[in-house]
Image (tube, rainbow, N blue to C red):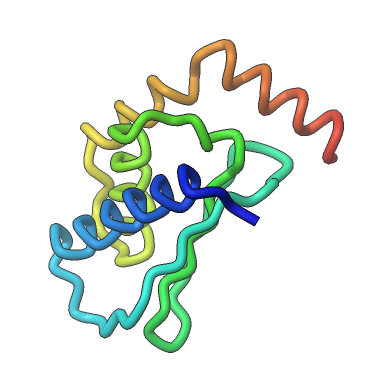
Length: 115
């Protein structure tokens, strides 16, 4: 169960995905966007579209990522879903945030314990 802070964070992240779909001029019908943190083994994220619902799973290792990093990730995942070029700016922001020693150690520890 999520607490109010977690729910607020997920709502903010959901708005980033809505914004990214508008930016990429999506023509598909989207009825709902569901975002959740998921305990992947590594630093993985997925996005898929089923019956007008967007399902986004973000590695739980990115739970504390700052909002600008979550926004960059949203733009990356939406671009990939819509088969559009990924923004260099979004890719750079995401890379800078995930290539720090703390995140790399979390990913390595996760592979050891979950893998």
